[in-house]
Image 1 (cartoon, rainbow, N blue to C red):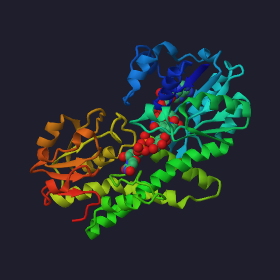
Image 2: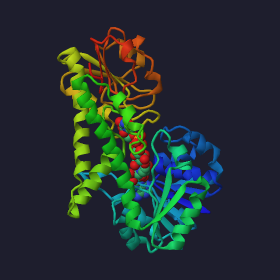
Image 3: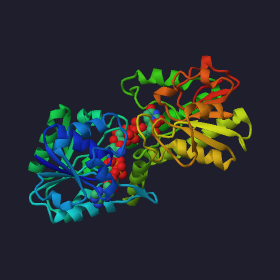
Image 4: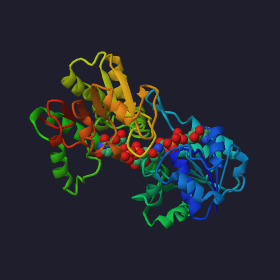
Amino acid sequence: MKIGIVGLGIVGLSTGVVLAEQGHKVVGIDIDENRVQGLNCKRSPIYDPGLQEMIEKNFNNLKFTTDYSSLSDVDVVFITVSTPTVNGKIYLGYVFDAAKKMKEYLSDSIVVIKSTVVPGTARKVKDIVGENVVVNPEFLKEGSAILDTKSPDRIVIGSENEKAGDIVEGLWRFTGSTILRTSLEEAEMIKYAANSFLAVKISFINEIANLCERIGCDVNVIANAIGMDKRISPYFLKAGIGWGGSCFPKDTLAITSFAREVGERLRIIEAAIEVNEERPKRVVNLLEGLLGSIKDKRVCVLGVAFKPDTDDTRESIALKIIDILKSRGAIVLAYDPKARTNKAEMVSKEECIRDSDGIIIATEWKEFYGIEDLLKGKYVVDGRRILDPSKMDRTRFRAIGLGE
Ligand SMILES: NC(=O)c1ccc[n+]([C@@H]2O[C@H](COP(=O)([O-])OP(=O)(O)OC[C@H]3O[C@@H](n4cnc5c(N)ncnc54)[C@H](O)[C@@H]3O)[C@@H](O)[C@H]2O)c1
Ligand SMILES: O=c1ccn([C@@H]2O[C@H](COP(=O)(O)OP(=O)(O)O[C@H]3O[C@H](CO)[C@@H](O)[C@H](O)[C@H]3O)[C@@H](O)[C@H]2O)c(=O)[nH]1
């Protein structure tokens, strides 16, 4: 089949390269000329494991352009543009813009909304492009985008036009994953319910971690035990500095404000957001508990990406920690194997540790495991619970959810 992808972020690229590997001819469109130029030189604009290799391997089936007229003979076009939250509400301008721009080139093509959109959006897209609209939300995680695209836990296809839904189902059958057919609104809602539930789960364990710090318990012991109950499951129960990234923060805000607009409050999700907003301050307070005032002290932040195996810093809690450290007068150094920020002086891992009084581990990159020896003599806050407390000087060490 001939496939169009509009919006070449991690979602568009992962969808594109995986379908190209299945033998489809894929044309990717973005409004960002630099991105398109780089991709035409086989350069991935994003770091995620295996993405660069997939672009190179399937290049014969891939074409990248800024020109919407390349969609004139596609069978299926995926909308994978950004859907940011602006002033607490979803901004759908990119989705509608893409729909309007593609409209004149589509013949009988199916338009698949893969971007995360609030319920009712597909119906508005239908008003622009016609009846053949399908909602196929994406559940990939950054850091394992290609693997997740090839083998998702489930696939959701929301459609009113059964034939269009069948064609999209056919595209994903190779994954062997369970395919669920739903209405347009249910497909839109499933995505928000999934992300919100995961965010709530993390905020829940983070609050338990707060209590553990007061009463001398280790939250990891608690999480391990409750996670053995199949009804709870061990996943997304890792206490830490809070949830960041390009999805949980914006999607929880989008769905809570959408709910208010239609006359409902999602109080549990609102509470999870509130708990999450307190996390970075708590982490800095732990460091001040060790160092006293951090004014004019040098602090090293290890990890600025919102999670390991990505160079993405969108809504990274590490950056919020850096802002708070600076607002309290600290001089901030940072190191990350892949991600960059101009909020702090980026230095090598060794310099970052050597030249600082206090250290905060903000991202659980593999290379930060087992560095206890390197941290000797420093004041350390482990925001990700990757260090072995028994190897640390307990007068100079604090960790999330680890009671003294
Ligand atoms: N990042 C994730 O892990 C993830 C996972 C699942 C779902 N999602 C959802 O998928 C969507 C895309 O996310 P992303 O992180 O890949 O986005 P992104 O912001 O990284 O990339 C989107 C791309 O779309 C381009 N774009 C914007 N308007 C355009 C237009 N009118 N025409 C063509 N290109 C346009 C931008 O230039 C950009 O390159 C969002 O709705 C997001 O919520 C993201
Ligand atoms: O036990 C955990 C798990 C995650 N996190 C944090 O939660 C955030 C999000 O992590 P993760 O979900 O692994 O990454 P994302 O790439 O943001 O993926 C989420 O957001 C995507 C975009 O919607 C969805 O497609 C995915 O299913 C959903 O997991 C990160 O800051 C993590 O550090 C924790 O603190 N504790």
